[in-house]
Image 1 (spheres, rainbow, N blue to C red):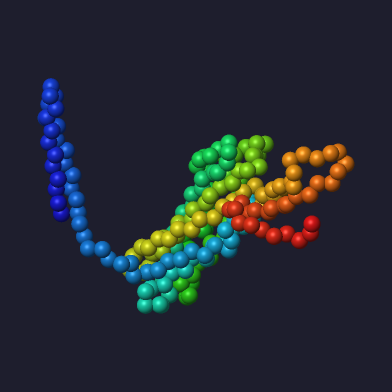
Image 2: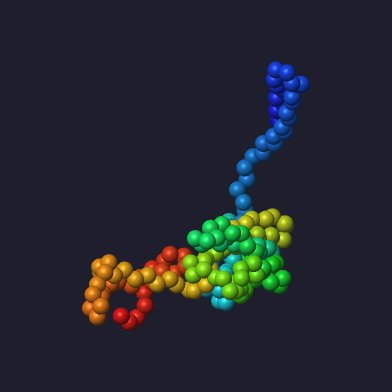
Length: 193
């Protein structure tokens, strides 16, 4: 344990003092490895998210006598609401889960449009970046957390059209390129022309 003290006496002012206490400890590598595997990286509102949390000891054994505490935070991404923080409620029965014999817990819940957003006003480009935090607590009360990100939008994909030229004559066919992207920006393919 260390203490730091600073004194200063600016001209015309009383003496100022500041103190800080610092504790230094040896770093201990956690005994548990926690991974989070989402079913997919992007969803549409109304879909059910599915994520598997896996916990293992470094020895390879599953953490089968433990619990997982879940928290979720979301941040909107939109041209109109660039950083609007909203709460996504996890159902009470999903907030704390037990790990099964394989050291796994499955988290499933419906992704509803946050109540703060008006159902009448929903910009097309609105999507949310979700961060799921899973804290694994084993039977000896050791805690290790892991985080996972995924996106949720009003539609499961965006469609962009790039014409072969900026203008054309009425009745003249126009060609171009269609690009499908998921709400997380991944390219998608679709049958048809």
